[in-house]
Image (cartoon, rainbow, N blue to C red; front, side, top):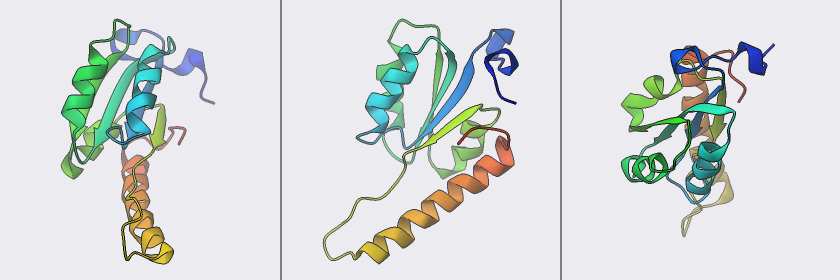
Length: 128
């Protein structure tokens, strides 16, 4: 039963708390910008294992009401996920030369497994 009236952000103001996992990638960066512009988003957490501080700085300069925080590295996953209402998973490894599709699947399955374990611990009621 997740609806607008049930979502409370920092300061008890209404809005969705959103985490983007894989925020520094080619899809994560423009999606982060779009989520920052969305008036129903009040807290936006950007997580990745590389380049998150730069993306966070760029997005936080946009003049909207959403509070943006960046989280860099595997040890910050739980902090990035705590209390989120919506989690968007974009994190993955691209296909590299010499890599089979099975190899790619196995690597990305491990990434998704780690992220889902974090979601189960820190925000089990979130929409994923």
